[in-house]
Length: 247
Length: 294
Picture (cartoon, rainbow over the protein chains, first blue to last red):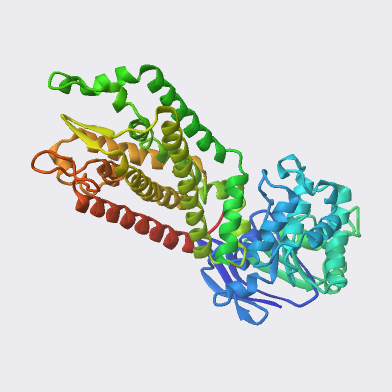
């Protein structure tokens, strides 16, 4: 589904992403972890062709992003960092707009169902300027889903959501993956959230890959660490993450 | 794909309340000028005809007609319309970068070139609608309020009298020419917008560039008259006035359907189109390769 090889991005002397390689398989929820400034957002921007890599290859669905950008991006839905939307437009107008951007004719019935799925049907025609941050996050997810993509790239999708919103988002990501066979690449600083939904996890630190494991393998490795000092042993991913990135 | 994106860009422009400030401002200014000329029109005409008043009698009531008022309005406000155009075109890329929506747009399947050209086309359509609105108020409204007569145009110590049957096409040509000039301003604002991540910067920069070149033009000193001014876009932006300068026979009789210097008008139009292409081309080259970090 997604294959990244030797991906590097330098801003002058500073190397934001350094020789990063990983694979995402179809139907997986792939967790993407790293501390603030580790290079997660830069990587995601390169995957969405917002930033040109200094070096490396990005292939989606067996095709290079650099030569098949249009075909590839028409199969991807994304949220990049804090989703900023058009405050003077309603949720329905946003979905119409993004449907057209994807080359589709707006389908009001489908859009209402989508807004029901993300819990915004009651406010479908209210201007986004009146929405809370959590509601904007939900609408951004609906915009990412409007063209029925096979791959979702979600950068911090739970930002600004209340506990119920986080639980709903978790449930939605799981159902998209399990029931609709979609692949989800999700970055988050909420390690416990990633632990609950991811099949496989990539951890980067200072732009470099420090681990790429399935959750099962990671749980096994983490159990070999000295976790006794941690008050909550169930946060396996947190313990493993800290052991890799706090050096 | 281009059509769909152009539609969404126009939809965004005309759903934004601030777009209508420009339309409102033009309506208010035109109505104020019409009101002023209705009340003090005779004094206004005397101000221009002082030098000729000793030579022959000036029929102020005939001069003050709808066509004359429209030309006066165009002289007064066309020079300020670039600000209204910059408000929209300067916001096109930089405004979206500032609000964070640019990254959502740039992650869509449409190429950046398509997106930029759609934004430029939307700005051009906005310019045309703004001028149509101005024509409705300035020409339509003035004809309604002041009636139709021959048009008298004052030019330094000379008078150009254009019969009313020969006037309408000149206004249409002048508005088309103004659309060319303002589209060039939209292209300049869009170019500056590509470099910025804050909408205010390109709007202010566009207006400053227009002001600087206008001052250089008004200085009328040889050092600028022979070097910058012949190529400065502000010189050619005022070319619309040329449609109201008519050719005369050796006996001083106006030739219907003529303009004094048609080649100068063609040259000015070509320079404006050239600048527009240049600005859009550079904007496209820069935006296509730009890293979207905001």
